[in-house]
Length: 547
Image 1 (cartoon, rainbow, N blue to C red):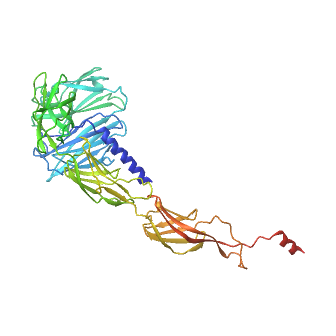
Image 2 (image 1 turned 90 degrees about the horizontal axis):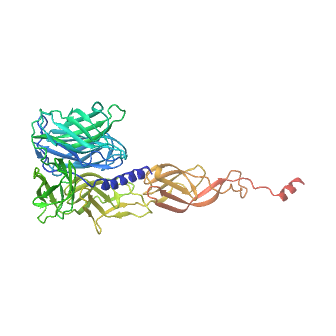
């Protein structure tokens, strides 16, 4: 039963991921890494740094080696000190890169702050990055940030930055604004706090040489209280030379989609104008869904060229005419499943990984095998490795169904048809013989057979209507203690001495596997016996004795 409970929990988590990962970001060409670090650089992005408790937020790692995307299949290890990752329901997960990016989703069970870390190693070079995600309570009275002005400032610091929003509280002495660049954190000088503005002077990061340094900002209110209110702003401000009205793209999530278009793409960056923007995929304008100071949500336009096709994505602020840097979005072929390995497995497990072959796979994905959510272990463009989940059997028939893959970011779905699917095979138990065919209460009997329940907790044995105590269990033998019969003790017959064992019932022996609900019966297989007692004297016989 415990396995079933775990399976149900993870099925709910897998279904919840698709619902909470709607407006997501992923990456193209990342900005050039700053100086002072290793040749392997990791940047972390999220589509929502302040999600509501009980939901999930997508997290993307952009991994470069000497400024170039790392090879496909590079493992990125994500860990978090709060919440769990959707792929496995654990606080750590390993995801492989595709086009230099790896995407996962972090789900928060309640309100709290999650410190996410991503690490990777390529050819002896190791890099890491950190990201703060603050899961907020559902209380709508919490502070919020709507814009940052300006969006850029020199790396030497000293920029007067205004964080605009609402429901702010406290004073400069109880408010903290921390800037993090390439893993280095420094506090800004808070100058004033009002109900809808926090004004802070930025610190300097002269030790880094990159022309543009994205700064993750952590804004804390009520630092004098036991539980300060914390907001995370991962792409609100950048240290660089660009003008504050120049839009800059840091990441796309997702960074690819099918050539049919209508993929919902979140553009992460800064300097986006609330008065209106235009977004172009190559030379084709996309449909803009929403604009905020650091995010634009668009629907990708369709394209008819052969796939995969990379195109430049640019943003234009209509009011100023300023145009962003170009980043790459890749049009891909539709999601197709071609074959599955290891697609027939016993229901009782232990399960082994299943490899799904095809094309058009994009992490993160949700995979179901015969309608049961599985645990995704790795994703590449043409191959997914997943561990089957535990189904709940209904009857004693094999559980068979299609293999389905969903690209969570884009909603693209692929499913097998016909005979190509997955089967949880139920090996039905068979009773061959008993070590003895008769006995009395507390005698020990061994039941021999095949496909018997191998786990002690799964084995249920009955002699007629009475349950026997199971002492040991394996797939070929179950040892039990004979239960007491329901019949009364028999009278001694034919002058048999008191206590002679007499048969009181001939019963079926039934073995049931509680996990699969399958049973095996050996009809009229055992004679239940009890010690006999002296016959009860009748009134007539008593009178004859007294004469």
